Image (cartoon, rainbow, N blue to C red):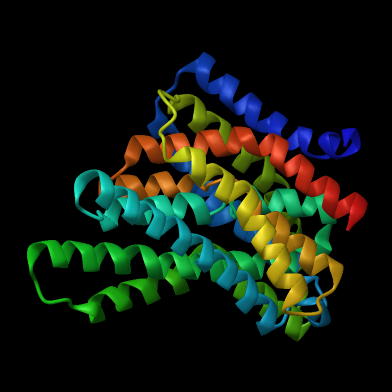
Length: 322
């Protein structure tokens, strides 16, 4: 266990440095805008492309693997969503679909962008990047579909308007195909299929950007936590956090091992990606739709802190036992 903790300690150490910097420097949160842009649109896509383009096509996961992992995420979302609807209806006489949607994401939407690639790379090496990229792409596509669809249906239902799904699906499709991680994944797969090797100057740039991706992403997470301090622990987190950190990876493990015969690297990557804490995008979605904002921020912070222990346990099992 000490060896496993030593494996992830540097990653959480960088987050801790970001947290300390945020508490000490007290610079405005808006100052993270360009840093976030660099990580999301440049550094992490460069890392995805670099590693995927150097991966043999035989190592890419098949459609069954992706279908199973995406289904596991959908099951967890539905579980949290319907629990939230039931709780809301019991307390207020209204299911409050918009709030339930954000709570569903808090339980199912892991930090597969900022924490996923660094964790997989450190724990399993470059071999885990291909399945991690696929899980990221399809889980994000699922989230891009669920969020605007449920919010739009709820908003139009409250207003008594006729549901107009075509504009919603056009917007969903555009978000999916233009996401920088998904574009980088497609480009990486294409380069691998064509055995394309970029010119040396381009390769050097990709190396520099890929090297900056993980530390920048983790540092930003720490700063964000410092600038959005935890005021209280909402009641919902007493089931949402365990579902995200324990139930989701257990379900992913059971489904991947019982519904398919996959190589160990695919199983390990699927479980680790499912075990990640709630994504910062949960708070972003809450802000975008103006619901459950403070509690969404609390969900991200509490699950991230708790994941220091749970990820250590998951990695111990995956690397030492499984």
